[in-house]
Structure formats: structure tokens, C-alpha cells
Length: 309
Ligand code: PDD
Image (cartoon, rainbow, N blue to C red; front, side):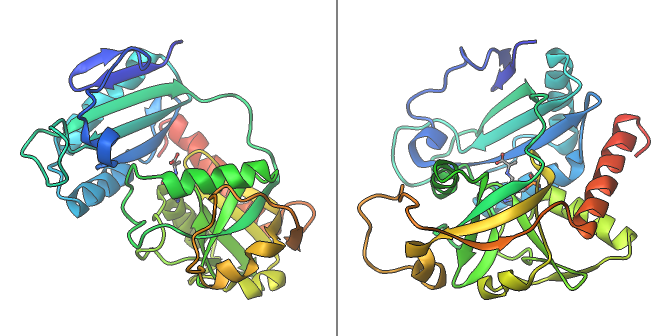
């Protein structure tokens, strides 16, 4: 089925829907977004996504154009039109259309949405991570559409042959470029706290709940990069990655100092090549805790798709 698009009241193909040049998202990145997974034709964990959307909108003073019930109706209609059982929904709310000027205009927010089939290709069973400095601003808890540091980090990671970037701020791991990061050390699960320096993932929230149900101990604390050598398991989570085991974390030798503190000197390019890869952590197979959580997550999804949760 073709992808479904929606823009301000009209369903249309994502390829033909157009936003005006003076759209604030386009000019300033002045907007927020959400990404939801569809399993069994139903939007997964939608209340938690809408809750986070409300928080992001409030943070940047955009009036929420819809109630939760209206959002649900709109999204369910888009999913129905797509006819897909397994899909990804992207929805964006920007401040709207107004002649370019930094100050906030008094205009209606602009809403867009897409629904696309999720490719059948499973994510690689064992991902690799490249450590990079977390150069993002201090409010990454807001799910803003300003993703330039994230897309650059992902691109640098991909060019180095890694699946994802592992971001490090002042010597401590925050998260991935589009995922939350987790470590298991002596049976205790570590993940960064839901403060201003990470995006509190909806998947993270479910994994915390599942960990509690499984009687696993979780410590919401940023892992010092220096402690990475002592961890037993690494995995990442996200709406698209679900629970993904990691088998290797590496870094470019030259990046080391920037992981502790960003240098003041501006580099020539942000797309630094990895010329001297150094492995910081490596394992074989999937760790016990990761496997348990992966299974619990898959079970939860199956029960959801069968209307049991
Ligand atoms: N990204 N951290 C960042 C920086 C993210 O972009 C994401 C999600 C997450 C995980 O959040 P969640 O579990 O709610 O998906 C953490 C989405 C999938 C994206 O931008 O495509």
C-alpha cells in the first residue's frame, strides 16, 4: 500500500503534500514530533506518546491543536487508510505559517502526519555503536524536530560502519542518536535518568516497567564512559529499534578528549572520519538480561496485537 500523508485537515500523498516556504518548522525547526509504532493495526503505547507530545508542545508554547481523543481519531483514520498492520506513524506539530521573523507569530499550528509500512527486514541482531560527543543543546528532553546534531552523529556512525552513535557528555553516556542506551553491570541495569539530557523514550518507559515485573534492578544513572569496560551487556531501545542487543562499542582514537569536554576550537567539518577505531567494549552473543527483556518486550507486543493489553 502507498504511504498515507496528512496535512492540516487533508489526507494526501506524502510526496504531493506541500508546506509553504514560510512554514516555521521549515525555517526555524520550530516544532515538535512523535513517532509511534503500529502493531496488529493498532497504535502502540499511544497514550504515553500523546503525553510526551503534550509535554513537548507545552515546553515551547505551541497550543496543542487537538485533544487526546481528536489525536487518536485522526491517527486511527490515517492507520485505517493505510491498511497496514505493521507501520510507523510520524506526526509533527509546528508553530505554523508566518512571514519569516524570529518572534512568535499569532497563527494556528500546522499538523502533518505520515503512516508507512515497516519494512519486514529485522534490525541486525547485534548492533555496533560508535562513541561520539553529545553536542546537542541542554533540552533534549523536548522532542523537537531540530535533529541536526542527531542526524550528523548517525551519519558519522554509519560511515564508520556502526549502526548507531552512542553520545557522551562530559565523560558520561547520555543516549543514542535516536535511541536510549542501557548497560548491565553485575546484574544491575544502568540507564541515564530522564532529566534534560536525554529524550525519555516511550520504549524506555515500557522496558523499565517490564524490568520491574521481572524483578530486575535498575539504576537510573549515567554510566561514566570509563566504566564501559566493566559492563557485561549493552542494548539500545526505541520505537523503531525495540530492544536491540549490542555487541561492540568503539571510538575514534582522536575523539577521546572531546568525549570528556568539547574543545573550544571549531572543526572544519562535523562529518569527521573515523581513521583510528579503538574497541572499548565487545561481547559475543546476547546477554541474559538483554534476552529476558527482549522476550518480555516481544510478548507484550504480541499480546497488544491480539488485543490482550
Ligand atoms: N527516536 N532518544 C532519542 C534521541 C530518540 O530520537 C528516540 C526515538 C529515543 C527513543 O524514544 P522512543 O522509545 O519513544 O522511540 C531516544 C525516534 C524513533 C525517531 O526519531 O525516529
